[in-house]
Length: 227
Image 1 (spheres, rainbow, N blue to C red):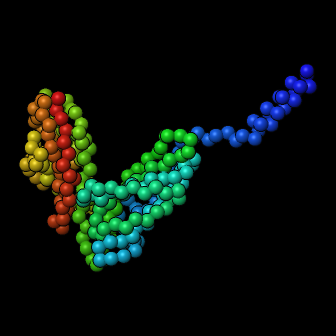
Image 2 (cartoon, rainbow, N blue to C red; image 1 turned 120 degrees about the horizontal axis):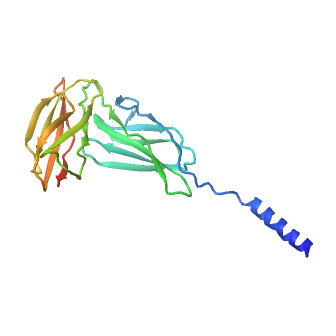
Image 3 (cartoon, rainbow, N blue to C red; image 1 turned 180 degrees about the vertical axis):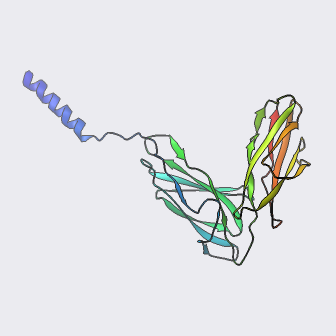
């Protein structure tokens, strides 16, 4: 009987040794590489009068077996996503157009993913050209947010950037209409405080960025609800 029990235990130990332990670890930290953040991408291959093929690269994420590359046209707010198993990819993009991009790393055996920072760049065009500022990034209130006013007032905030660092001001459009009227002009701060609002009302707003060359960009219309 003892020999039989010992034999069974030996078989179980050998079987356990044959099975590799599953790796359920989530993706590890990684960083973006190219195109550079806040710069004009001049390394693309021109394929037509209006388009270039742009290369993307990022660091490897531990435990990841594939990556989603998401690229957004900041003028039209349309996005495309490529799923790849390597840490490089290419995409055909419009010239003279601002884009943002980020990577989502995914690992097997787990639903946990890891999203990178979001970087912005301009896809370069032919010839000498001045680039409009990147569209302002809305900080607060965010799209679709429900907010509580303080004494009947709220604060608006955003960030702006330009490849040439020559932003001279912002025009803010704000109101209860889906096509809000001009509210403030030539603001040099990234905020407007103490904006009067009414309860149970949806407000719409957007920010137009202006640079020293007269180029402009629009954040796109955002809305929020005051309860």
